[in-house]
View 1 (cartoon, rainbow, N blue to C red):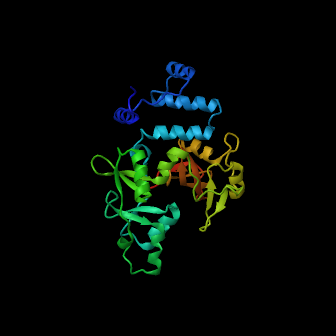
View 2 (cartoon, rainbow, N blue to C red):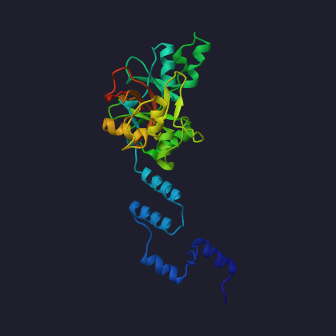
View 3 (cartoon, helix red, strand yellow):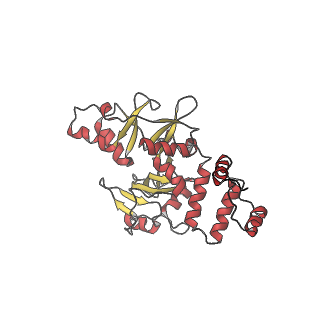
Length: 303
């Protein structure tokens, strides 16, 4: 006598039937002979093979690789080191603060009291303008709370915090609680998508030299040396290098960092923006008479 259907279904509810394997015998043999990647290195190799087979685009492969590598990176790996941070002094005059904000071009600034290591908050550049309309305001009242993270904090976790808390900047501290540097959400995202264009970029303009409000020139790092010579009437050498950034790096023996300044060929260069091991923008003025030889002055306040 056959078993009632209700009994069979009840027993099946207690011990579910195993999931049916719908793979073909060939697919199972292939998987046995060529198992999936067992490490991140093998996974990256698999992505490279997928690109070669035109299964994914090169840009997609690069982005996926960055995501994989970012899992092992910490805030300390990407941060801007403390000596190169642009900071505002809470006791500085308004005109001095405004000049620094204009010169650096950042949208957010850590603010310190008494000493650079004592960061008391974050000032948005747009909030500084409120003091112009209402001088009686206290600058401390305009500060936003500073977010502090350890050097060892993973970038994946930090990116989640940035998104959930709507913060764009974090102060990185070392194991002793001292300021080690700072990190922005843009810094983290660039580890995934590559360099992000910013407010200094002007893709529609053919020239790499722009006149600033104070009469100085903003010169792109990839501007042609010939163009710089034409604008300033100088005779910088054009034989060995095509771009002004390449010439400058050769003359001073290294790629300069933000805030650093030097004089070459009768011109004074100050780094406005540097990313990815290259200078994006210089601020260029004519050097004082007689300063034709390369001189180098590193500034500790650039990002």
